Structures are given as structure tokens and as C-alpha cells.
Image 1 (cartoon, rainbow, N blue to C red):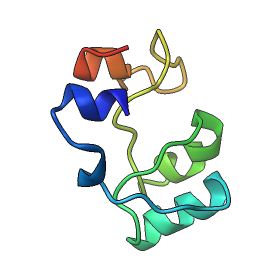
Image 2 (cartoon, rainbow, N blue to C red):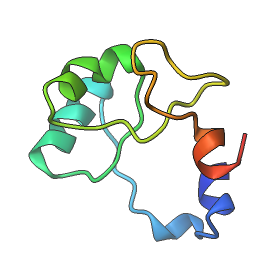
Image 3 (cartoon, rainbow, N blue to C red):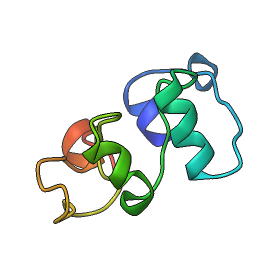
Length: 80
């Protein structure tokens, strides 16, 4: 929620969809049912490498060596 506040978005501005984990969420993302999901790099790696999704930011203190071109959330939004 911190990233939403940093962007000036109220919590109800983004529709949330419950899922049963990263695999179903990634399937929903690829199918177009979701615009955004959060998951770990290993969970998203195959989908990203297949060009079916892209990573906007890494939720870590430093960039991930697997995807060094993907900025951290702090770099992107200036929030922790």
C-alpha cells in the first residue's frame, strides 16, 4: 500500500483480485484478466523470459542479478 500512497492513489483506486498463489495469478495476467500482480522472480521468470509479461520493479533493496535492467521499487517510486 505504500507505493499507492506515494503515487497519491486511494486504496480503492486499484481493483484487487484474490488468487490461490503466483501460478494462477500469472496465468490470469497472461490471459488478460489482471493488469498487475506481485510475485517472486522465480515464480515470474519463465513468463517474463517468454515475453508474456514484464517486470516493472523488484521489491528488494538492490536489483536482482537475473534481471539487472529491472529497477527496484525504491528507484522507481522513491519509496521503501
